[in-house]
Length: 381
Image (cartoon, rainbow, N blue to C red):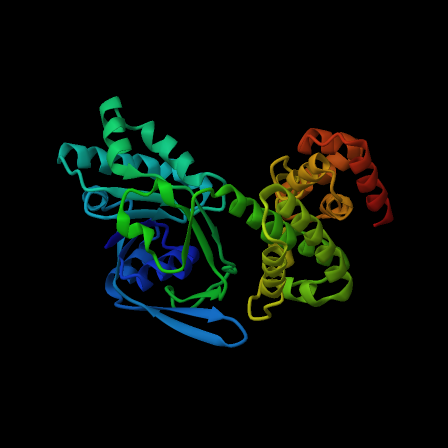
């Protein structure tokens, strides 16, 4: 089995390629970074360090590299030769690579190549593959679109693995946490062998798993970080074991667990286990992750469909508790980092508008009880 993976960064090498390699896929990384691509072309192996209580080293082989700028014709040919295309390049870059994928799919039709293919976006976004498909289709004729719909699968997926910011002398070395989760919509796949990738969880409905991750991992990570940053701590693992911070963010996660159980029917025992596993991940001292990194872009994190406001609105709808989620919004508003563009913008807004006005504008949050909780908590900080 052959795979083309767009994005040779830490997540691509340390997560997606790791699982594919375990299942015997030959992985070709596609990237713009010349040094990275050259290393992938010339090296036979690279190392993944899995950081748990101890450090485990994995050796990855059976890979290659392609430069997306200088090897386009080879790239288009490879698109017709592989069984699976995956991405981990960031949502903003998907429209850029869509044109190249479309060119390869056009060649596939021109060559009358009717081998099935699956394309999966492994991005931190909801319905990332659906978005990528839409961008690809902008560059295809109607005839090509019909062909692609018949022979190419576009299942959505959800991915979860903490890969901290890092720099090594060895350009291919990557450090990751032990936990990883890759969930794929089974019905969207065209290639039967792509339904048997090691450690991938195949589901009929992805939405419960996307929200479970968003409301637990993303919400918990951010809540911990804003609480800990306000207290003057530096690293996520410090915050995770600090008694005051811990009390705050665990209460937040208890609220989101109740929401997920009520909305999606997760078994309480399973939800409790998932929450505890998530907390343990944050405690990992070998993962050196700065709070400042997690706290960045506070305006985005106050978004209506983001990790705090969305569960608050679900809690209101389901008549469940949301007090600790609401209190967290005050800590986000308090976050002041002159090096972060959104933080600077948010502090300017706070100088000229009330908290209620800001949350109505940014979060589309107008519930008086919620706004009152946020204002009271903010005044106490």
